[in-house]
Length: 238
Image (cartoon, rainbow, N blue to C red; front, side, top):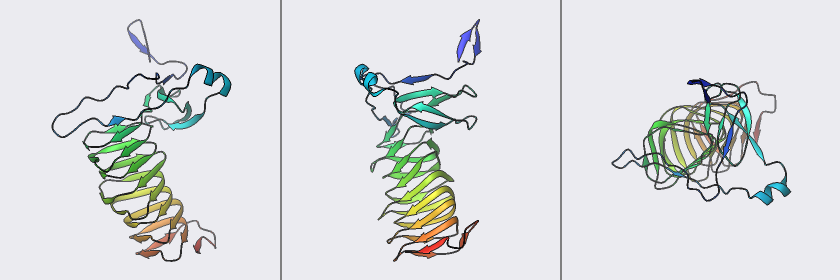
């Protein structure tokens, strides 16, 4: 927003800010005790001559937190403004390597390292990779990738869910995904508008609803499976 005559005025066009090369990003203040701000992942800036020869910078779609509008931003942007409602959108990437108990809201990517944990708060981001502990509600506009053991408390919404080989996870809330690929051990109430794929080492326990199901040889499912709006060949054994 701009300030005119002491009053806030929404800009006619949305603004996108690029990170300055070499300038350290600001971090959230610590809340004390064992809680620290997650590290902001570094993004390399694009040099002047590189921009000239490469032409238009690469862009990606972003979902507005406030009104749900989808618009495009430059991939190297650190923040933007929704052209529809004027709301501020953070695009920072975060790495969490210790206990963190404050809400994270960004359309950048979040990585929870093995030593990190997010407990009792909500996480809104683009891609979320979990190698540590997650006990929070999650909303991802991209991929939720799980590589660890544990229980996830709260509801989960994502475009794509991937549980990697060796991971053991129990979702205690409802899970809604566009597509799902499982190669670990999962206990969940899962609703998938697209395809659920069970890889060779997969074991899915619980109620699952999907538009289609692919089961690789060696995969297991315990519980109820419902295929909705599926063609006659939607369930496939490989």
